[in-house]
Image 1 (cartoon, rainbow, N blue to C red):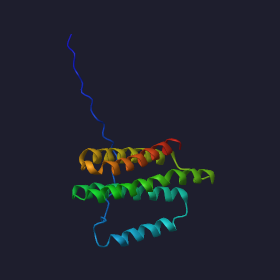
Image 2: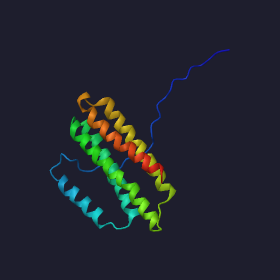
Image 3: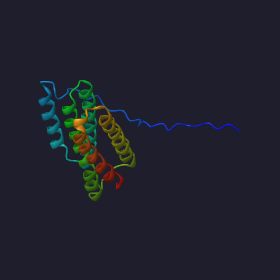
Length: 155
């Protein structure tokens, strides 16, 4: 009888990130940031605001990837931290929406879980590929990601 050994294969999360657009190192980025804040401020529906925060969070993590490829590791981690902070707000918005009688769909919650897993995968790759001196910063962002995962699991 012949035994075949199977190597453990790390699973890659299939979740497509949106195009990030202008990066923080672009001179006109400040206009994009102001526009984003105005849109967030003007969005009153909690579910729509949660969807907007997901989009902004996904765009920021995409920016972090691009910045790290450009060799701007510190800025990449800073932007990844902002991405996770946007993500952190989503679960409270959905809890508030549920209290008001307009809860989110289970499909959106599943999308949140996939996005969170993709963010975790990206942050883990940063931990492996970026300089060792940045490990504390990356670990801080990963902790926020883990808190987000816990809060999403309660939805």
